[in-house]
Image 1 (cartoon, rainbow, N blue to C red):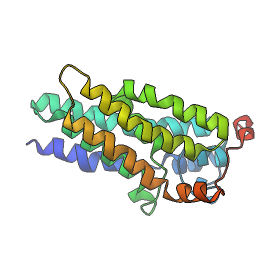
Image 2: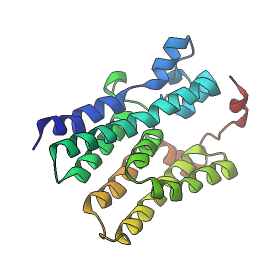
Image 3: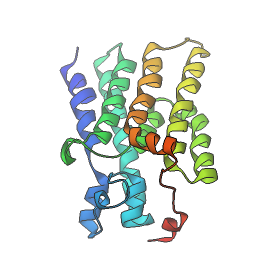
Length: 215
């Protein structure tokens, strides 16, 4: 077992996922701290509330990349080491990146909801399943203006889509992929626990489309 691979998939992925781009962009541009508004999170939606659409787009891009790049880095290391468990290491990196994004060591083990970072990991691991789940996200937000509802529904849809796609592949269901399909969305749901409670109570915040007009 290559120690570089182990460290990259666990500590490296977690630290990469922990980077609080919302806070970094706010400080570099003199914007409001995202933690001071809305949900108090550092992710893209709250960055949109605090910083406007352009800076929020930078935050969202960073949050996606901190999911994609650790997986690709681990894939490269695994290929170089000839490690036969490469798929497992990619999944470990993906999960640790999402954990880092929701429980960042840099901001008191708080962070975002893990959606953008989870999206980034799926871009690297399961882009077709991601494409299948994405309409749930966009259509529900469009129809209800509830970002949290679109997020948790898309995460829930991603799981069976990926499992079925893997099972129907020529090589059959990959245990690593099945693990990712179950645990990845579960982490996103855990990060949305307070949103789920508000959705149940009918008190969840709706998305203000006027925020898209703010630079």
